[in-house]
Amino acid sequence: MDLLAGLKQESVVKMHLSDYCTAEADASVKDVLADMNAQHCHNALILRGGKLAGIFTDRDVLMKIADDPETMEQPVSNFMTSEVVTISKAATAADALALMSIKHIRNVPVVEDDGSVVGNFTHFSVLDFLAEKFPDVSLTHFPNYSRRFSRRRHGG
Image (tube, rainbow, N blue to C red):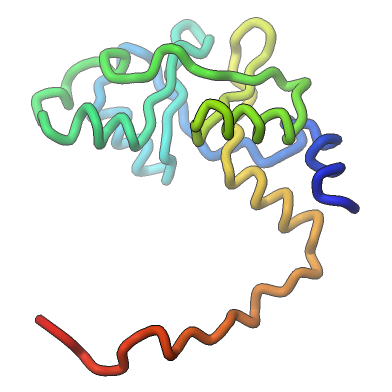
């Protein structure tokens, strides 16, 4: 199968969309970060009444939270990105990738028409798709870059 044709045909709902966790908008930053850490997520989709209200990512933590520890008890809705770029579940993987490229984003929540969350499309979704569609590609023979690194220890 041709890669481009596969991405144009594959619906986003048939791809791996589970690299996220959810939290309510009134949850504290501390609680959301604890959930993200426990579930090994890089982002949390923030909900109000079961509908997507925003997204809170590791980038939000670095840019908005890291400098000010007093923010840990505040609601996550104060720091989330509320204007979330989403895609419908009828979209293809190629549509989602194009949107990620144009908007320079790493997460595209997939939503129903009523705003409820179906999943989160990320670069991991594409990697899983490639691994599934091209199982014969071997990753056991990596190039040898031994000459690019010093064999002696330098510095402390």
